[in-house]
Image 1 (spheres, rainbow, N blue to C red):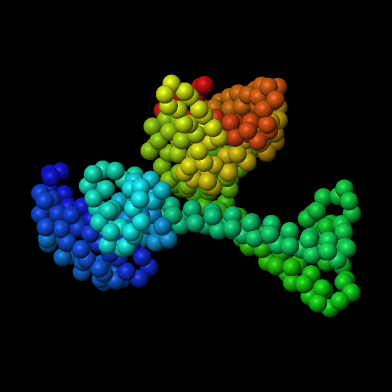
Image 2: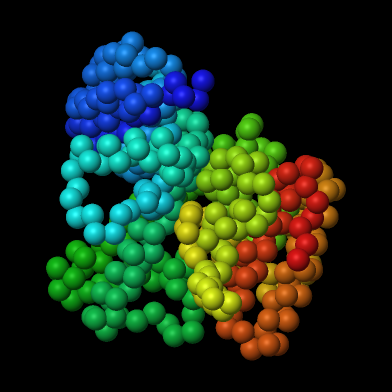
Length: 371
């Protein structure tokens, strides 16, 4: 029964875990401090199950420990909730923070139902998600290395032909043929070029692995559906799928838009309405991917050769949703542009509507979203 639930708050760290146990019916509470090791957690869970009169629910803050502790506890028969740290209520003026107080606070808020649960992916989903994020990290490193190299050459007065695109094959051949006067400068150039070659090979290998994963179950179907949209290919589609985990947990497109922080902030009171910039809450990576894809909808609707290839064999329902997205989003871009709206704001608004079409495409029972 609900009244027989034991609530446990865990302040988890790399080496130790502080636990606060609130027994039901006002019985005496307990505090434990244990090592963050599988054996110590197993012994503590066994003692807790013997002491608790009914079900046990634990919680800890999402953070560097990830979801490993949650999976360990659930394998031992305890229900565990990972909560969003930014949404934990805070008392104004409370300036005392210890592990014991934090664990006790989590247990009390959990019992009161004031904590927001983070949707935990499965171990497989988390592995694919981390592989997708690893590819993005290498891409960021590549951009930084390019900037480092180009600015180094600019300081030495070595410049690529104005008007020609940088980082093409011709540009790289030109860089490899440069010979600088000082041996130290030449060593820097050679080291940066070696780093760029290594990053390029890493990107090729990671892209191949992600492409292979996207072509296999359970990702083949949702990735294939999302690739029907303009501006979304395999890597972006797979990232959307693994970051969302399960789109069915969002009851409507608006709920998904709010989760991604693409809805306007608001501070309305006393009959006055004040709306500001987007909230930027939730998953920042998904928000960025959607905005990048939204830039494609500034072009006139059309089906390119590559897009036609991606749509081959896909359901007519999904293709119809993707076509409607092209026409609606391009029309809205033109309308906003005619009103003098800044391009960045327009694209964010387009990205917000794009996720609504993505939600409809991933849900076979959903209708195409409307304004």
